[in-house]
Length: 323
Image 1 (cartoon, rainbow, N blue to C red):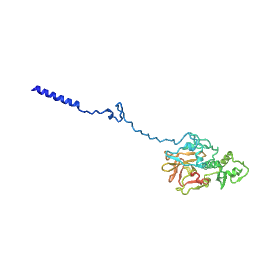
Image 2: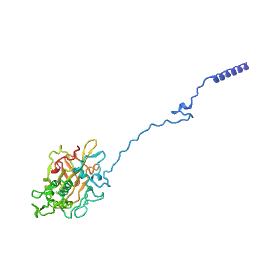
Image 3: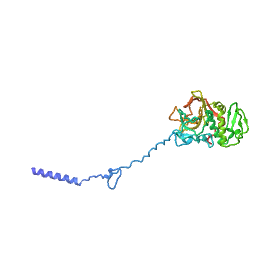
Image 4: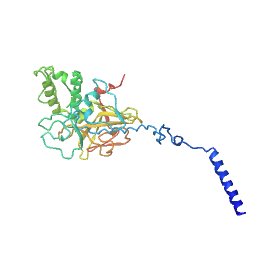
């Protein structure tokens, strides 16, 4: 009986093995497991999609030490662009005005350094050896140099003393002031040349005052609708009661908001070199100032009210408008 069972089991096992060998089995090739099929059946990862890197913003230094003009020395803040300046305009003239080296200091007329000056750039002007070029004279110089360069000699004219108009138009024709500075007399050198013009400036500095310059300007009455322009003046008194005059030397705008920013230039008393003043209230903008102040403008030497803005009579037209 045991022998019969052994034979049966052997037959069963034989049949099972035969069935397995004849059955169909599925072999999965390695190529189908890989994202990319290869003839060698080797796994190759799919390439990652190309990602274009986001370019980093170009950071431009606010003060470009190699720049030798107002426009090339001082850059607008990031996201701002300088306003259009028409060729031959006062804006273009000031933007191209020469500045001294980046390490230059504000100097008094006697050559000594003004230790407390907060200057972003010092204009390349030569002061006389006497204490004549005060706040008004320093600003008058810029107007005079501009109109002289344009050969608009009749606009190189400033009130002095008792309603005397001290003009280069008279000066270049040989007229000079009398010893009292009250009237014109003949007998001077006739010339349009630069030397004669510089002599005119030297004489102007002796006579002009802040009150004189103010009388040659129009006070801006509607400070809200009459936008600030290059050449506008802010006139006020410092903590010592001395008159200070700030001129708007350049303007830029925020590309997104349209907000206007300005640079300010000043001379001073005692006579000192013209310089672009830093902004003590906003280091993120300095030396630019917002034109949107609503009450007082605070500079290193002066706090001036928004209503104390003036425009020189020969700069009343908007010569910088882009056509």
